[in-house]
Image 1: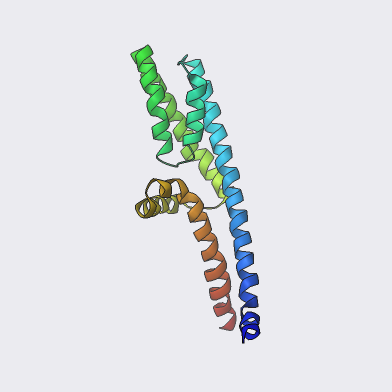
Image 2: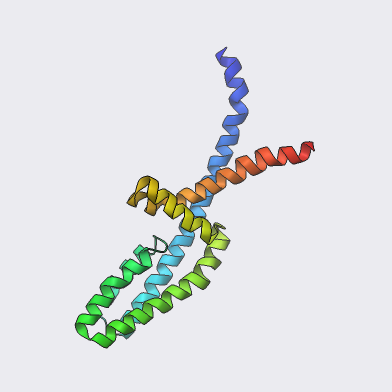
Length: 174
């Protein structure tokens, strides 16, 4: 009886192994894309803050790069501390730092992220935002951090199981 059950599930084991391999590849591509974005933001922030002579420019740049890991929320959080410190130095400098971060965020949002993520993962911005809301509601702050990787895994499972296994077979039989 056990051998009979094992034999009938052998196909599913190999198929699940293929799907999990696709998930690992997708997460690897997402990680590379996220690292490219983090380095880009960190370098631009560091150079901009250094040119504006904001104290602790390197620390702020590293923080901006790391917080870029959290889409939509991280870049906003990363601007608060350098703006505050620049305001303590000179009020005009705080405005300059705000403009710098707005320019960097626009470059990242409208050019870098669509280019990098389209090549790496192909997640739509609406899916990204919806997954952040959904997983934050479910898991709190950890859900916000893990929303994009979980969305990549869910997307891979939907593509592999629903599209390839179910819908492709349905189309072939018609």
